[in-house]
Length: 567
Ligand SMILES: Cc1cc2nc3c(=O)[nH]c(=O)nc-3n(C[C@H](O)[C@H](O)[C@H](O)COP(=O)(O)OP(=O)(O)OC[C@H]3O[C@@H](n4cnc5c(N)ncnc54)[C@H](O)[C@@H]3O)c2cc1C
Image: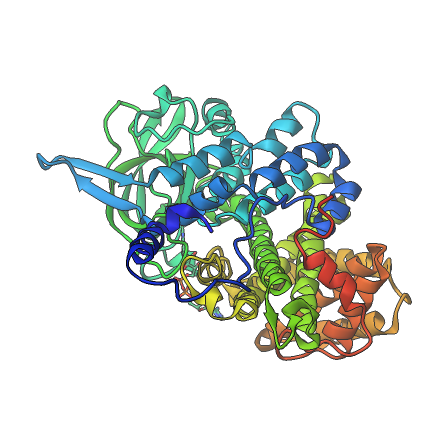
């Protein structure tokens, strides 16, 4: 166990030793899952990387090692035990708007930014070395997010901001080098003095979150500042995460309609830009990350993209954050399953290790099957990001919405079931499971909740019907490989023909299942594809652990085991 979480236990144990007989020996407890290599132990990820980014393997082996070190794991516990706090004013009454974080949060951020989780594909593309860069970065992020997910919010937003910042060439020239620098500079000082910059995002207002057209924040032109059209923003945001970022991409109304702005924390003149943090959100999960309510009191913002084109401008950022939701939620699933498999391998009940009990075998195999499907879809989207082909761009248009909907939505149930594998210990705060469980619904809700993803899929299909052709072309690669897969595709075709708005979720679910089935059929691992087609398509169950008889559970359990392939 991580000693930093257990000082009182050690103290009371010492006290007891002096005064009383030891009452019992502690045995048949699994112990902490640590000192393992998250990459080497993850056969599904390794296979994906061997296909998509083999040059990244050595780096991922090192990263997998880091993510299994007890001290690194402990940072995740500490960052969540010590909530960030807001200081609105200094002791003399001057406005501060500073967030105080525990050192463990800064350590995690430092690691993430030094590793280029926010930058590597953009930097490598610039250097002409982009092959497999999104796949490699997604894999590294998948490992990192398993240690702690909440601090990934500013990492993702900074990563995702790059395509939107590119829309303003002057801003891109001045801001992007520091946004993409592989360094973390948490100082609350002027952006010109900093070595590295982070970017947040402000869309959601009180009266409208999903419906950003309802935004009331007003932006009035004030002329050119530092070579860009500047505006003064008055209004608020109801959710603005990571408010210590150096600037925020914000939507506000102009005479031309909703427009996108980059609002820096410090004004170009050197004073604090009047962006005031009202309070921090008291969230049930995502605790290490600060999310805030803010007011803009004449804050300067530079126009990004054309006036009135706010949604198309920021949507480039949103597409990337949705992709990262797929990465993050797949990572949550993987961490949950390795915790469950580790526990079940080291705990006996009724005369056998839990992992050898037939019903438990079905549960763990099924939890891993979910990871296989999630990872396959995520890495397929990473490949599409790495590709310049039109087919892949069309696939991506539907795939990020479908993938975010499906993977994020499956997560809470998956986390809960893994928690149940661990029994009562899985409910305790000194275990990672409560954190994984509370984190699980977050990705599903932010960046467009389930219904919004489903509606976005419909919108994409009606505006560009070729996205459906691209999806079908992808499925065609496995046509006639298996009648169960063919049946899902037939169902999908039927749904495409009859679907109305009310049945949008059904359509999205069929899109997700059809793609996952096809990808697993193509992965070259027949037993995994068989389990998916039998357990998700032919005889789907209501809960995890009800896979039909006759499947190769041993293979899935080995792939769930964090040590099996770690050689
Ligand atoms: C931890 C966290 C961090 C966040 N950080 C940020 C941030 O940094 N920046 C930011 O801008 N926002 C942020 N958000 C806000 C988040 O993006 C919104 O909460 C989300 O988009 C939903 O908006 P809403 O809360 O206003 O709910 P609503 O828009 O009111 O939606 C409520 C429900 O109605 C559904 N719904 C909406 N419209 C329709 C429709 N037409 N048909 C059917 N169903 C519909 C939605 O899917 C949802 O389930 C964050 C949220 C969380 C939880």
